[in-house]
Image (tube, rainbow, N blue to C red):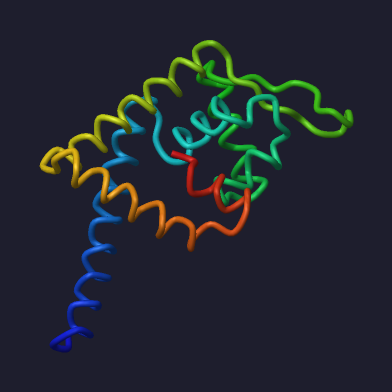
Length: 157
């Protein structure tokens, strides 16, 4: 690492990376505990509950960045667990995925667990620091989001 302004910028970028990974790991683990399922299941439940319920498998696949076959296997797991059901899609060739009441409840629990993990991460910040951090996060997110698909992927948990 360099010294001076360049070193400070590099350190700041490194800290952002470390914080991002640590928070991401905590959110993922908390959502898995809340949903009582691992892997991509919590993100699928939260996405379905939030904006994809009743969507075709392809629409579910996209924000999760899974292959079609991996998404079919994930939906199979959700159906087997009683959290989702398949229905006829809009064009009779596609298959739509809908959450069951138990699936909605699991999504709610995953979101609650995610919220608790985030609150723990922010616990040492006072309200002014939280407001400033939110302002800065919004500014950084604007540079990372180039459309609805990117936003869906970023907001999957």
